[in-house]
Amino acid sequence: MRMLDINKVVIINCFITLILLCSCSDRPETIDKSLRVGNILLSDNTITSPEGYNKNTDTAVGVIFYQNGDTVIVVGVKELGQYIYSDSIGTIASVTNNSYSLCGTENTAAILSSSFQSPAVNAITQYPSPISGWALPSAGELKRLSQNLNQVKIAMKVIGGDDFKSGQYLSSSQDGTTSETQQLLYYGVSLQNGFVTSINKHVPNNVRPILRLR
Image 1 (cartoon, one colour):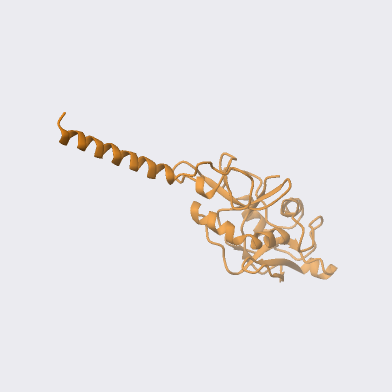
Image 2 (cartoon, one colour):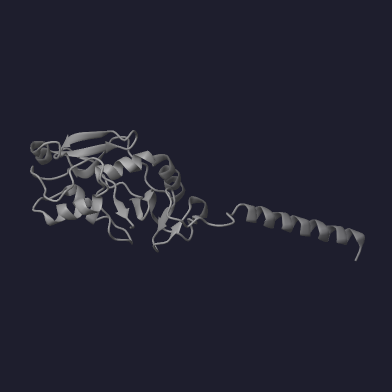
């Protein structure tokens, strides 16, 4: 083989090696599949990190926004629109009426088993998802989402999830300050600052589903 041909082969091999090295360096050496805030829940019930997400093969259903011990809560990828809390005024039994408990799943079940019609909860139950168990978040859960919003936003951008709104989000928590407020008001939460506001049950606000994994 002539010297010129040998040089060409060497150059081509070096070029291929460089491409392979660059290609490998773009991929994470290990994919974080832990249940930590900011990681992504996939449609097959597995977890991946934003770095490990593959838009061509993975289907994301939500992002972890809270983890403490065995408790892990995910926020869905879609905004559901604005809805009212209830079509009639009154206290719904078995709903936790404070602004700190992480009880959206229990509150949603209590509202569904009551005689009240909740357009917000109905929107949750009709939410199209390959995974079941979605709930209307409690005020406490929305506050936790607010605290970790920046991490969640990073993952939402990677998976193409809906942007969060700047207004109030409707929670499943009634205002338990008095028996009267419990009948008339629910707690709304601003995700931008975590502020909690008491709002009339006939006033619509943003709805976003959550899912408790454990």
